[in-house]
Image 1: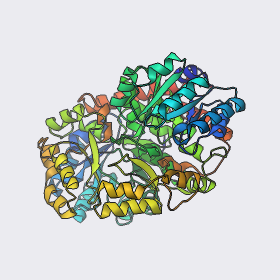
Image 2: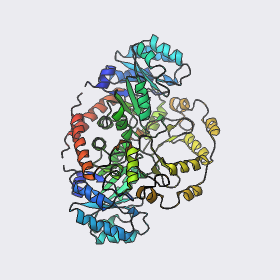
Image 3: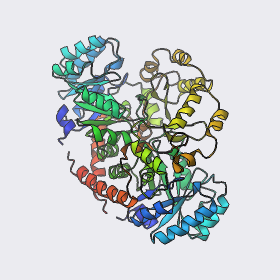
Image 4: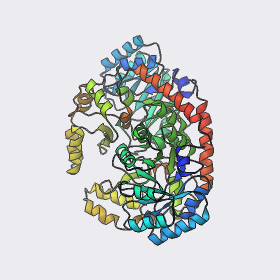
Length: 315
Length: 315
């Protein structure tokens, strides 16, 4: 298959594994890339030396293209960017910040840049900033999210109407049918996060992986909207946030409850009660922890069968 | 095309026009049915005598199947059900209540019954109640909505996995591409509300229709979650609700602000500032007021071209 996304990143399938904090190390990224998708290392939870190590190990584990996801609010951003350039990473996904700041710098080093957005307005700003592709992420996605609450079903075609550069859809996609639906709505490729949390190679704690598999419809909520909106599993920590809302508490109390390192505690250390468990609504469709390569294979095979089924619909 | 939904309702295309308050009279319903879809009269905003009149006029305006949508919290429900039976309406869509109460009564009169839900749990309850089809409506839909906030992209496949009876998808769908995406995700048919608000035959005030056309990404919000969650356009009335939230006001103050007849004021009488304007996120994809028959034709033609395009994707 040759389309805008497979050509841009020189990959076999237009399936990108989201570069998530605490979850997406070199093992996951290389497994996805080896299976024909695009694996991303999530730099957001890595100290610079840890990131260096993951990039080096990823290069040894795959000869296929892979990339790094960088949240642009990262405190040691300059140091991270230097590592990206020195290690000759070819693909960077940026999120949560202004794409004007580093896009041309990275592209000047031969790096392809995609930027994650949650609205039409920010998609067009990213295009203006010169990025190579836009990731449009809907309300149903796990983790940090936008304030507009636009869902994938409407965000993908609304962005598609106005965007000229390649479009990657994210949020709610975890299957081959989802991939076909996203492409029917106008996406050139898809990014899946939650589906790969529950993979054998992800560095998520096994407790968290199992929790994702157990999560059903209605099991997550987008909360902390006054800070940065984030979609979480409704665990004990989440219910304590909601209790603060019920008490009409202020932002300061929210920040105090949130504290530090909740995401690491939940997703990496496996504390299912006190930790922050970031996952998308698509968790309700994830029933098994599998090897990342198997996930990619099943997505493509389900895409093909759904494609055939849709081809047989006649008017 | 013969599928579960076209067979069930004896219609040409599995496209259902939502039976919305203040918007869906006999003119809209008959226009949709005449074009091969299924038109629904929205009983929720009609006194019993008004509903009788609309059903009688609809029978004169079309010889094709049409139906009536009944919110089950309707105050004169018994009277409405008597009219449905006496007028020999063949199709009823129920919403916002317990489908166990009237499904078998209606089916005993030869009426097909579909019930609208917003979660997997309620979909299975509706199936247990014996309904002929389930409408699964996502978070992006306009008007009243569920508490789970599950979006169409994940709700459709999650319901599909467990439901045995026909599944109609609603919420965020307004185009042929949307219809293909919903069917790829597992729907047997689609229900579209917002798209038909901005039709020539809808009884929405022209001010409201024009406002729908102007509405962009981020222009709506799901609010009043403590009462019944409802998706509204962000107008003056909406901003006054939000001001109450900012002041940490209680439910009583919300109810007082809401008052009575806000929906009629906005959607039927065209007061864009003080009225309640219920519309879905898909408004951002609606750019023109068109005849309902043209809308159906364009949906089918876009479905076919998207189907062809997706058929050409090769791995």
